[in-house]
Image 1 (spheres, rainbow, N blue to C red):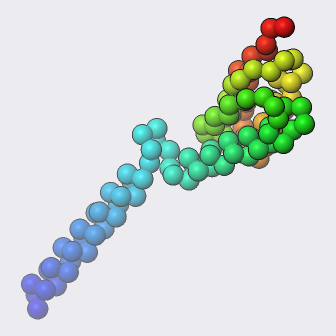
Image 2: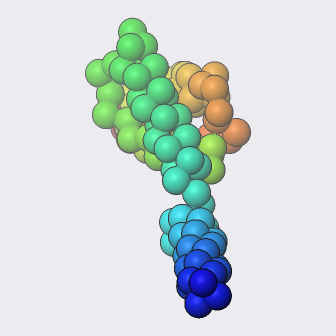
Image 3: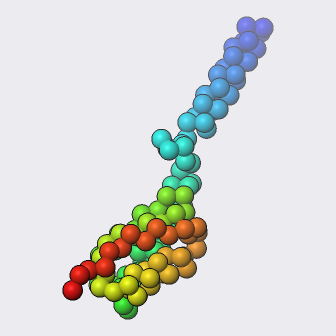
Length: 108
């Protein structure tokens, strides 16, 4: 009976150690949790959808990347007003903390 109790104690300890190991290792190489990565993906999707639905910007290829709530916009538009509109749309999206507007204005 005593050896059985020792076995159960060791097994319980091993399960605890493995659980802690897996919980600690549930991060990306950048030290982010899966939830943070999903949040950024959601922000990216929402910004892209808003840009696509916008009557002025829907024809432009604007790339959207998000990292820790910071959105980076890349692409090209015809005017500064269009560039500013893209930034405004991104900033109006829930979860966006900052926008890096790297959109270029095409030469005419």
